[in-house]
Structures are given as structure tokens and as C-alpha cells.
Image 1 (cartoon, helix red, strand yellow):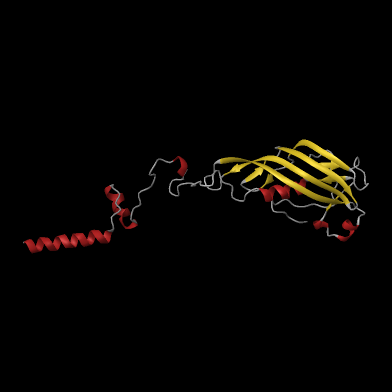
Image 2 (cartoon, helix red, strand yellow; image 1 turned 135 degrees about the horizontal axis):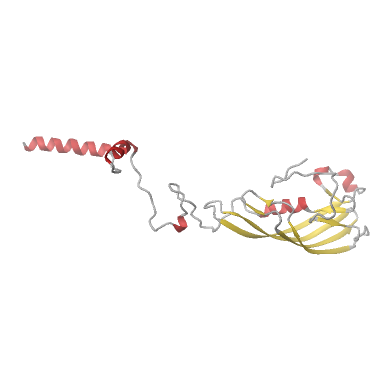
Length: 216
């Protein structure tokens, strides 16, 4: 059993449900090479299809515009599948959407074909009981089409590392005062932040004391 990029496990030799949204019946097509059938329909995605940060949700609409063609070794399926993916920006975590359109060109081998007999089970798709299942092909194609790190905008500045606010909506000049950790205890004791370098302060104090001595 193999695992594709989207994490879906590939199952071979299982019974197909003819009523499943991405299962096509080839019986009307026949096995005469050159026979062709157009498939145009809107179906619901059987499961979440895509990547961790962005995917077509389970139940989301998939528009199929396909052609099934009978060839010597099996059924060639070609055409496009279109859907709407949703997710979040990888930088600022804001919701985003993306229209996904993938191109399919897949051969489904007949059980008694030379292709089926000579090819490893995980390297070729198959016609099973005159049915072909597009689920795996669609899952793979959508996963390859979607970005691994989706962005709401190419120049998205992300989140402030200090407070987590979105930089895009932060006030102009948004920033945070940084305190020298050596002064943290004094700041907590006297109720006021300080960013002054203690070494500088010590030098200044010492210099002032020396000056006072000389004036006396």
C-alpha cells in the first residue's frame, strides 16, 4: 500500500461503489478502441482533498469535464477537474480561498491487458468490474497543484513576533520597547522600564563622582 503526497493511502483490489462521486462506469463505453464518452457533471468531494494548510473540503463541489476513451490496453481518461479550496495564510493565519483546476491524463488498464499483467500494482491504475475510480488521481493532482505555503498576498508581512498582531493591520510604527535584561529587576522594583545599558550608566556615575572630587 503506497502513500501519496497528500497522505492518502492507495488501496488496490477493493470493491468499487458505482454510486461514489468519483467512480465512472465504463460499460456504456465498450472496449472497441476509439470509442469515446464525454463526462460532464458536478459532484461532491468524498473527503478533504489537498494539503495541511489548504484543501478542497469534504463535500465541496468538483466540476468534472472529462473524456473517457477506449484504447487497446484500457480506458484513457483526460480533461479537467475544478474546485474551490480553502485554508489559511502560512504567515498571518488569515482565511483564504483558491480556485483549483487540475488537468488529468490517466490510463486505467483492463484486468486482462498486457499493461496490467506486467506492471506493479502501485504503478498503474486499473479498471475494476468495469468501473474506474478517479479519487486517487484527483487527490494526487490537487495536492501537486496547491502551494505548500499558501499566502493571502505575496508581500504578507505575517504576525508580530512579540504580540501576535497582524502587521498589515497594526498601527503605523508598531513596535515594542525592549528592556535590557540586566535592568529587569530594577524596573520591576521601581515601576519603570529602562533600556539603558548598565555599563554606560556605571561609567557615567564614576565619571561624575570623579569630577565632583576635582571641583572640591
